[in-house]
Image (cartoon, rainbow, N blue to C red):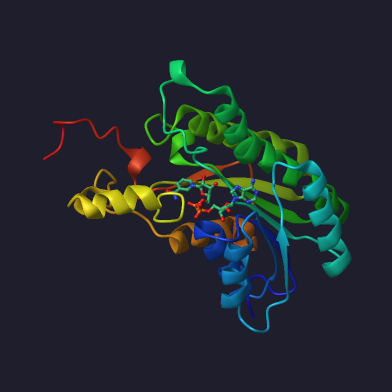
Length: 264
Ligand SMILES: NC(=O)c1ccc[n+]([C@@H]2O[C@H](COP(=O)([O-])OP(=O)(O)OC[C@H]3O[C@@H](n4cnc5c(N)ncnc54)[C@H](O)[C@@H]3O)[C@@H](O)[C@H]2O)c1
C-alpha cells in the first residue's frame, strides 16, 4: 500500500531537480503522474526513471501560458478522470541578467520571473482546483523559497515572486478550504539542482565548496529528495488538517538571523 495509491498528481517542473524528485517519489508511492515542463529532454529523463508500473502522461507545457495550462488539465481529466494532487514546482531564478539592485531592474526580466513563478502557480490552481472542488478532495503544494521570506537569497524579482506564492497559498487555501481542498507551500533553502548549478560549479572550482550551505544551522545544503519528502507530506493525508501554510525546508536557515560575530 502506497500513500498515493489510486491518486493522480500533476507535477510542474518535473523535468529537473525538485520537480523530478517529487514526481519519482509520488510514482514510487503509487500515484499516476502527469509530468509537465518546458524541457522535453528533462521530461524524458524523468520518465525513464519512473517505476515501470507507474501510469504517466508527459507534456510540454509553459505554466505561464493559460491556453497550455487549460489543455494540460483537460487532457489529465480525459486520461485519468480526476486530479487529486497538484505540485506547482516549475520556476526560474532569472532570465540570465544576474541580480541587479531594484534600481537596475529590467522590466522584461521582472515580468518573466513573476509570470512563471507567480502567475504560473495561479494558473495551475485556477484550472485544477474546480475539478478538486467538484469531488470535495484535493491537495495543492506550491513551491515558494526562503527568498520569499527574507532578502538575500536571489534577485528582487525572484524574491517578490516567491513572497507572492506564500500569500497566494494563504488566499487560495481560504477560497478552497470549504470544499476540502488544501493548499500549502514549501520554502526550500539552498538545494543542488539545475537552478543552482552555476553557484555549485563556481564554488567547487574555486575551493569554496565548504561554504555551500554553511550558514544553515545544519551546516549543509539540501538535496532535491529532502524537499520532495516535505512536498509529499503536505500532499498526503498525513497533512489532512494543514492548509494555508508555507513550510521552510532549509536546514534552519530562516530560523536564525545568523549575525556575523554572534557565533563561534
Ligand atoms: N534549488 C534551490 O536552491 C531552490 C531554492 C528555493 C526554491 N526553489 C524552487 O524550487 C522549484 C524547482 O526548482 P529547481 O531548483 O528544481 O530548479 P531546476 O531548474 O532544476 O528545475 C526547474 C524546472 O522548471 C522548468 N520550468 C522553467 N520554466 C518553466 C515554465 N515556464 N513552464 C514549465 N516548466 C518550467 C525547467 O525546465 C526545469 O525543469 C522552483 O520553483 C524554484 O524557484 C529552488
